[in-house]
Image (cartoon, rainbow, N blue to C red; front, side, top):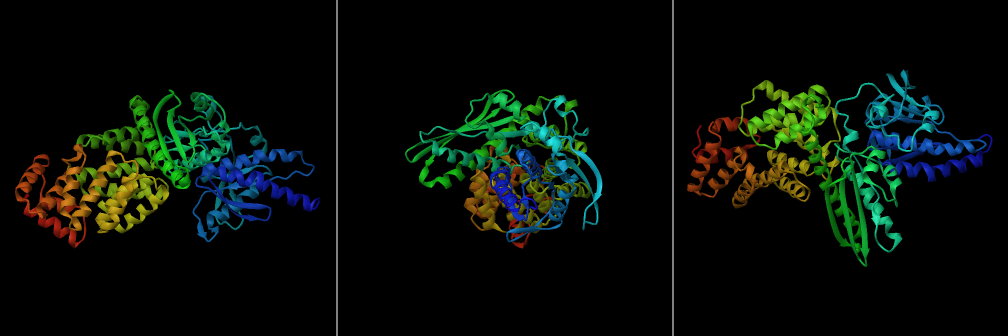
Length: 577
């Protein structure tokens, strides 16, 4: 500023427009505010923030050619914030503002919290600066630095390779659940097959929306737009793309417009084999372009995530037992949970406990372990003692403590809190947060509907179930949606509808205790006594140890109205006390 005030001001403004703002936007972030010659930006996750920082500093290399080059220091921290109008506040913001002062000009400094989250995803060596005291921060923090010389040497895509050579020089300890490299996915630019080259903006917009929506699935590591868009307009072998970007899965597609009609195609490919795992096409009218874009994005992302999960389960089944890590144990447990028997769920629970043993902070394993115990109890397969009940609650509370973005893990934990902790109000608050994190999670909407039934919010429960039906649903979520509709219908007095849902349920779930009971409840209320007798016999055949007192002691349905209906129906059916 002393040497060339006007020129420095213009250069800084130019860098904002051509480098800083586009880079932050491409990495899913937003600029909160400018602070003189600096800026404050917010990102959905640590990896996006660090990728933006690296890209900005690489882009600044051309500034070195200036007689008086500009240089930025960048600090990256992860923490809770307070949002107030267009600004953000909080301890996390204060720490981020202090970090940049420890960076060399042109370099980047990370807090330990950020370093832990990104160190396995980047083929980058950070310098450990040790424990340092930050101005106006009472506690010391451990910091890690990426000096400018090392940034200049980085490859265009500094993602960690799967090979031993690629990991050389990285941190020696690798978390068992660090599966980002095998579960990572890239969405390539969609081809514009229309005669009008101007329509490419529409194709790019769809890809950006898909990347953003897929990023909300916590079990997927989605490459940012600026990485995948290096392939725009290029004919490539997808297996080469997989090796170059170090991703297992790739989404590609095309957009073709004819008049006012548009057709969008998309397909999911496993880059390790070249196999097509899923493909579909979507037709619509350009007159409703934004609604069409939202609809296509939703259908694509809710189709892709379960296919990737299924492919990963198949891969885990081929992994030797002695080589199973926390993630593989979790996947094998998911496969076992699809078989609705006490033996299968018991084996699944054992695998989930092994996963937790390998990584005590692996939220999906904790959440599914809690849910396994809930299913064992709710299906009448076993009576859980107080210690086991508390164990399930501990797992659920641990999920909420360590994970705030994984909608599926959160909804399983919340369901456990509603069932074992009898705290539907807290569970619903967690569910609300879960669907905010991922509005495209059919499972989260389904479980939220069921917890609303427990709480007596029947109309809200039906709304959640309808929302879930509009999304892709695996068998588990489909069953919860049907049960939600059925129980909500029962408690609002629509007994014919409740019976219809009881009989609609999936074939492999008709013998489950809760579905057999829903059918009995509806038949009793409809005064179909002969059918009630048959339904009661069927229940006792599949669940010979069932008793009214046992069910009342563990039923999650609470409230005087629910209890009165349930007790009346159970006794009217002549079930054993």
